[in-house]
Length: 236
Length: 79
Image 1 (cartoon, rainbow over the protein chains, first blue to last red):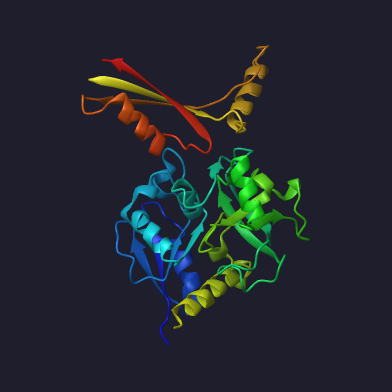
Image 2: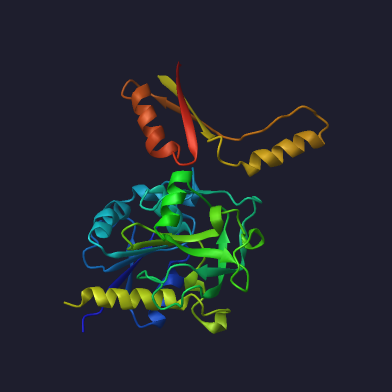
């Protein structure tokens, strides 16, 4: 059977690319790195935009990376219905490129936050979350300075009504409250999907939560879901 | 040469925790009467005749400001 091909994007300043690669290797996926200057993405079925500090976070997080050849080709890739997962800085890049709605602001307490949080899976009918149970609570790390999700009222209403909010910060029991919101994100939003349902952006790092020896395995099912979805897409 | 000055501000609807913190610091210094502090960006672009206010506005819209959270103004000065 033909295996789906994963590409992990590498921008100057990406630093979670190895982790994303490793998370996919654990699942025996066919994965390789893609340099940001690459404009031919034809051989790939899934692109992962990893976390890090592309272009030093100059101007705004993700603002410069959106103009790379890879990102220009990514629009066609997305139009074809192929899957894109943006993690942390990858999410910020997708917002700046206006592929996903909204923007990131500096965390409300102005601090870089690097710790475990809990998130609740709000939508399991996506190619990225199908292996989870509805409202499953994940223990997963965040590591960011600009993860304070903002959207205009109209955008927010739209993504809420469409079920595009895929993850929300919550407490250990899955209750979404102000106390469990680490960064000030509107409606505790930790991850959203595009209208078409093939692009997911999330601030928490599932690739750092794929092996119990590293503290949590709760992020693994994102890659399991994605692999299953990509295999499904290759079937005739 | 012409000098273009682009000022980028957060939209009024967007909270500015940095501005809030600076406001508190001003109050700690003993100054009274500060209503609010908002922090933005100031960008200077030096260019020849190839660039115009119109083009700088385009650049600001595409890159220098994020229209979801920010607004901007472009001013031109002769150097």
